Image: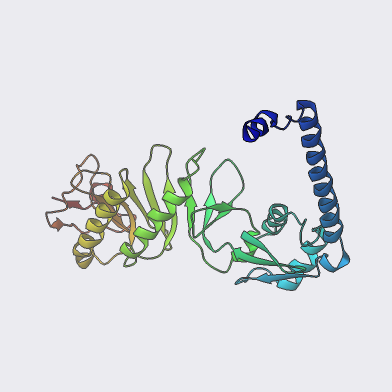
Length: 298
């Protein structure tokens, strides 16, 4: 009976009113916000202490065109902020605005330093097209502006681009140049590599000889050039005259003009590379008209 009475007298605890729960939640949230604001204010004040002001900017990299002391003296005054609030992207842009600097990587070094690794452009060729003044192409095939007088003693070749070159035109032309240079080394150094608007390639050598390479993929143009270089000595063995001009834009042959000689008469079809050349001597300048200088290959 007593147990039953005890059970009957037990009542569950009253539930906390909903408005009280909301008030408690709001108070907790405000407390968290207040603590967060205090921490943020403390951190902000801490980061602005003179101890964290940038004390040193360390420059690294293989610099050949720039002087470290000069770069530091000209750039560091333009940088703002301390260790925590320095804008690394802005700092990178400032360093990459320096002439000849291709890329800058900026990192923080505790507690008050910045480390900057600079990469300079390595010029590979001049970049020429009629739409603007000459520029330079680096070893990555990227076009950049620089003082051309800085490289005038380096005897760089020229890439002559078609009008309105595409974004990747310089890279493709540099690739072609690198493939052709060892192939044509027996003939001389490539002074100019030209690409026309129609996609036809030509080169001018350092002795002013010109060679029309024609159109096609990189591999097709290189293969055509290799055949020409391989067969040209047969002709020059008979007539050891310097090369003046060659035209490789034929399916199975090429036309060659040596200084004082030519492999084509007027209206004659181009020779076939596979067949040996038969060359007739050419009279000197001033010879009678009926002895017009010409040679032919069949």
